[in-house]
Image (cartoon, rainbow, N blue to C red):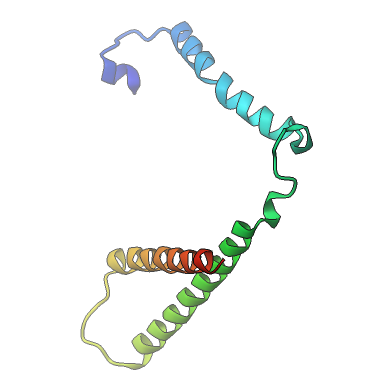
Length: 117
């Protein structure tokens, strides 16, 4: 596909190999670093990053926003099931609105928890 876009009529497999070979080392080194390097050998690294205050704020905000979404979706499903309505709901608009509401709920909760300390 790329050869068609670039106007190359006879693609060279060796060139493709060398381009692929040049792009692989950095992600491979990063993966090996994540898998092999021990946090205790790094100077200044947090011993248990999951036990931080920010991690607690994140967990509480995520749990609260999930509860908000479940409550809102339950109320909306009940209203749509029992109240007769003459219009249809376009899911292309409703689903992104639900995602945006979840983002907003999480962000507000996180900022409030961060301000409280």
